Each structure stands twice: as C-alpha cells, then as structure tokens.
View 1: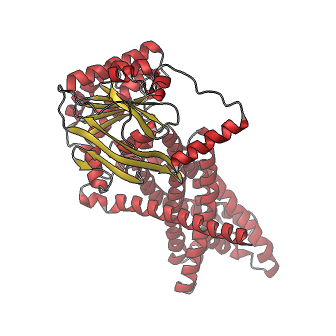
View 2: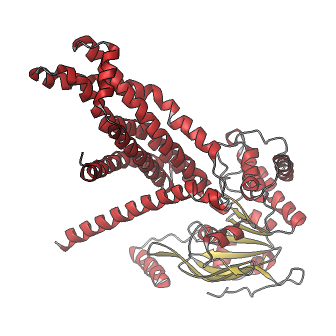
View 3: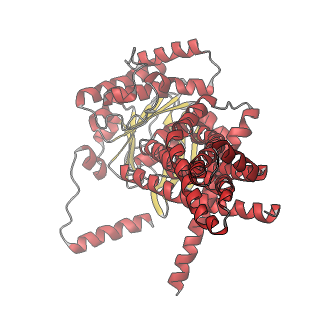
Length: 266
Length: 281
C-alpha cells in the first residue's frame, strides 16, 4: 500500500516538475522575445524568420490538403443529421463554426507537432548529445535566447496564420459538398459561411492557436534540451515531444475552451 | 584530500598568482558523489594536465570548472572570484575570459566554420562585420585553417574540426583555455599536430591552459604540471619530472600502464565493492 502511494506521490512530483520545467522554459523564451530587446539584448529576427518559413510556409501544402478533407468530412457528417430535419442548408454554418472554433486550431496544431515539434526535439537533442548546447553555455550565450526564442516567436506568429488558412481551406472543402449536394452556389456557400460566424468564433480559435504554438515550442525544446547521452535518446526525446505535445495541446484546448465558455457565456 | 606523494610546486619562472584555485570541491550526480573534495591551484600561464582513467572524475572536474556542472560544496576561484556563488551575469562575464575546446569539437553543424568562429565576436562585441572577418581569418590562420571559413563542419576531418573548435575558443582572446581530450579519436600524427598547436598557443599568448586527457605521451609533452585523479580524489600533483619519479602505486600503475588486477574470487569482488563504498561514505 505504502509502495503504491509512494509511486503515486513520485508520479505527481515528477509531473509537477515537468510542468514547472515547461513553464520556466516558455516564460524564459517569452522574456527573451518581449522584454530583453528593451534591455539591449538583440532579438534574432533573422533566425525567427527562417524558422517561420520552415514552420509556417512549408507546412502549407500538407495542412491545406488535410483541412480541405476535414472540411468535406465535416460537411458530410453534418449533412447526415441535418438532412433528417430538412435543414441541410445549415451545413455551411456547421462546417465554418466547427472549423474556426475547434478543428482549425487543433488540426493545425497536430500537423505542426508532427512537422516542427518533433524537429525541435531532434535538433536540440542532437545538439545536446554533440555538446553544442554546452559549447553555447561556455561561450556565455544562452541556449534559450539563441535557440528557443526564435522558434517561440516563429510559432506564436505562424500558428494563428496557419489556423486562419486552415479555416479557409476547411470552408473550401465543405463547399464541395455544399455546391454538389446542398444546392448552394459557390459564392452562396461562402456568404452563408460568413453570415454564420461572429468575430468571437475566429478570435477564440486564434487565441487558442497562439497558446498551442507556445506549448508545442516549450515541449519540443524542453525534450530536446533534456536529452540524455546517445542517438537512442534523441529518438526517445522526439517521440516524447510528439506524444506529450498532443496531450498538452488538448489539455490547453480544454482549459481555454472552458475559460471562453464560462467567462464569455458561449 | 591533500595531494599525496608529490609536494605542491611553484617554479620560480611562473607567477605565484593562482589563475584558478579549487578548494575542497565536491560534485555529485544525484546521490553518487563523483569528486570527493578536490583541492589544487592552476597558476597563471601554466599548462596543467588533468590525468585520470575512465570514470575517474576528470571530465566532471573540467565541466565544473567551466560552469557546466554545479558543485555540491567547495569553491572555485577564477581570476580572484569565487564562481560557485556567482549570478548568471557574473558567470557569463567570467566565461568570456575563457575558451573551451570540446572532445568532439562541438561545432554548430548548421553554420560554416567561419560563422562558428565569428559567433562569440558577433554575440559579445559591437565590432563591424569587416573587423569580425579580419579577426576570424586571423584565428583560423593561428590554428592552420586559413581559407576554410566557408566550409561546413561536416566537410572537415576530425583533426580539422578540433582545430576549428580551438579557433572558436580563441575568438574572444581568452586568458584561460580548456581542452577536453584533445587527442581523442585522432591518429598519432594528427594528435601530435594538436599537441604542437597547444604548445604554440602557450608560447605565443602565455595563456593558462587546462587539458583533460588520458593520453600519456601528449600529457608529458604539453604539461608544465599535472594532476592525477583516481575515483574522484587527487592522487598526485607535480611537474612532469616529479610525476615520472613518483613512487605512488597509483601513479606508477597509471604511468606504467599496469592493468587492474582481475577479480577471481567472489569474496575479493565483494571486498573491492565494500572498500569503494567505505571510501565514498
């Protein structure tokens, strides 16, 4: 019995320590991004732009394809139920609200985890194993400032951009069904979608996407920076970064969706 | 533990001012203590070689000196300041006076050799780009890599990587230079070249150099003094000649390359383990 309690206690302590580590890293990166430049420490914009290209622009083709399909699937699923009530024209609202409030940010985050969260862990993990992180420290260069902050900046800027694009592609996917099966014209479908959403639907999704970006960066970089010795450990860190990021993104999603629900009444 | 067998030695040719003073330094990984109270000085302008077998704690000592590991107790005085209790800003200021060459070079794989060497200059100085370029070429020339600034680290051989790493360590004109296993993984000719480079740096810049190695030939060539570490304790400290003359059994075993006696009996093995745990306790 005591053994079980000890294990549970140790698990709780480890989890809290992990979350504390993530929070410390995230806050430190945010501080280097938004506070340090006013204290004379330069912001590495060039590195952030390069990272934004990699994280954002290069993710566009795969993200477009996935969210186009998701929009189409959503339309099909919604139509299945709406048809029974003779309300198939509401398919446009169903797709656009689901995409902008939930699926746009979430699917974008999951695609970015697969592409960039894993890459952050692998890159920093390899640097850790080959003593490059130690080399930075001995040169009095903060690894967080040099390596994590550009990624952090790129992610919190690119995630909302990608999410907006994902929402648009989702609506486009839905319009294929809307035009083909629900009697819409293309412009009519788009107009129905725009009429169905309010600004709040978009902003809540975008706020969540910024938090997802911060979470994915913190988890990916934390796992990378805490990689043990050897190539095998880099693989372990990369896997842990992906699995933990997906869990953390869904947890953050739940927290913010609850906050918006209880604070905003919707 | 006080250095056994060999007395403390301060040759008249050197300044008696210690560049680094280590006092009763203890370092642990979790509950396992690696260094059990190490005390010695590194004098200004001397080359101190830290010798020891695998797992002796010599690399941990080096990592602690450059601030990559935190000691559990003890003091490290570098240029008259105790680095153990320093703030991050003070530690960074001290680090700017030090250069470190890592075992595998630790060059940044995504940057060219030139970018690697110029990085500390760009981070810590306000020098204009043309000035940085001149300094970068100068540093590469010092290590025999002139013209290699546009190469990627992956295009360099093992010896060249180490030279490039030394150039990067020299970028800020450090007063203290640390080398972790400079000859490891290199063939004897390339390794001799690195030894020669260390000697030239010492002669040209009068730097204080600390080298961790288990390569005896290299150690005796480059060292002014050496310290032998065994299982986290200093066994002997002295000049190369004093080490050669030492009668200390562990020094003799190390220098004469005598293997550890094989443990044949189960009881002997248990005694060996118990003896170690008593020492550490």
